[in-house]
Image 1 (tube, rainbow, N blue to C red):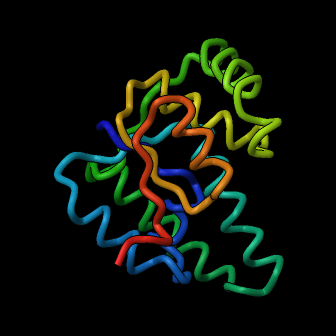
Image 2: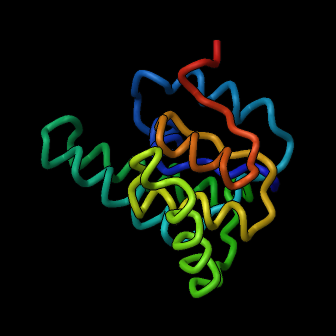
Length: 149
């Protein structure tokens, strides 16, 4: 489990979006499960519900999406991992001092990168330019899903 997927990358695995095919290729090429934390779960669930609010999907779709999500957790394709939140937030603060003035990276994006660092991940996958720069500055290898064919 050396790859961290930002929530914006996890969502298109379950909801058809412009990067869905690319992200599916990335995930299918992996042999190990994807690590998952509570922060990603909260973001995933809320982003899905916001799509109902914006009338992009129906409540019925939400039920199907959450079922598929929970099926993947049950099957071990997604593995819940604990986060030491004090360490992760300290790491995010440190990272912010290094990159925020240069990149404009938002706090919540820094938290994702910090968790990946604290988990010892090698790769960080996202489509967010500022987050890519923050992950690189943190010493992670990055994969920009916008560049995957």
